[in-house]
Amino acid sequence: MKNLIKLEELGQLVLAILLFSQLDYAWWLFPACLLLPDLSMIGYAAGPKVGAFFYNLFHHKFLAVIVFSLGILLHIPVLAFAGTILFGHSAMDRIFGYGLKYNDGFQHTHLGRIGK
Image 1 (cartoon, rainbow, N blue to C red):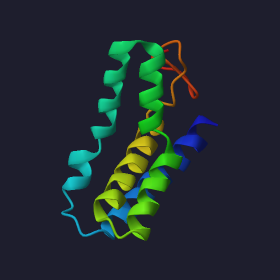
Image 2: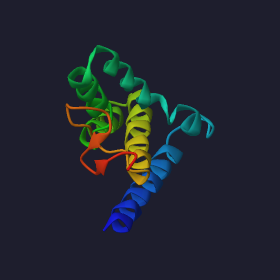
Image 3: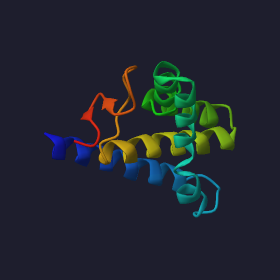
């Protein structure tokens, strides 16, 4: 099952790359910005509940779809760009086993524990 989930996430990462390729940005911006959503981990400095909230907010694919869609519908390219980064980053994280976080600590995710 884990391989099937990883394959699905790989497909979503490829989709993010394809969507990005349709935007008018230099190619190098995608890999350069791909790790920016991890800045949300700074929330863990305020405790696991705050950390999980901000981490999950910036790693939720529905938020990424909303941001991307608003960018396309409202003709705001930077929102479309941000949506592709959020979506691609979330897919990449899940390929490596980093899921959405529970409130009791960074290692407890919806995909299981990190660092078994």
